[in-house]
Image (tube, rainbow, N blue to C red; front, side, top):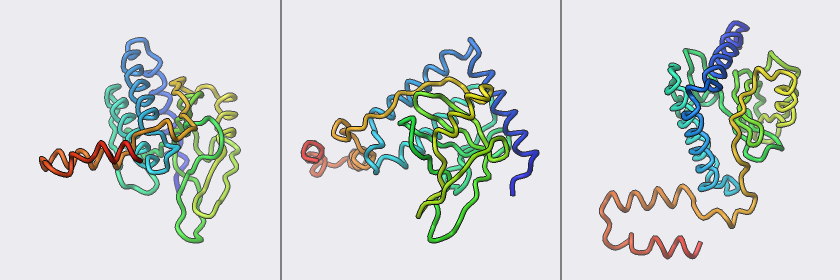
Length: 214
């Protein structure tokens, strides 16, 4: 169970981040983050299910780099089940939604287990911005599906409309819904890098054919 003091510290960290993110002296850093995130969403469209975990991890890394550039102490918690980042010794979950609607998966559930949302959470929602929330700060309703605990994006949007101090207008573009317009997959790029690393002379010749015919 997360203590009330932890949520209070998490909120203060986000407010400090908001102050730095909105400062004119950090304008170029925020611009770079937006450019990188938008390029990621465009190149590796999450309409293709294969790209979702890869893009999620890449966003966590980009956000960690941004925080570090703003002089926050940050650690990327790769492989952790419930937390994605440690910021100034407080654990945060980072959730993304690149459509601006629908549900966000808060926690993946194995089997018939039930889960409870407890983590201080930063939501990055295309068309809206970066939002902070936690289960103690608003009257949120979560929902159990077969494999996840979810929350509807509209609840987060309505919350930050009423509490604008927890919104940073880092506006990302929405992803394309047409998967045919997305030609890249993470697995293809990994396979190509591996072949290049082993200095492949034979197999690498056929990578372009596989890309062309997928």
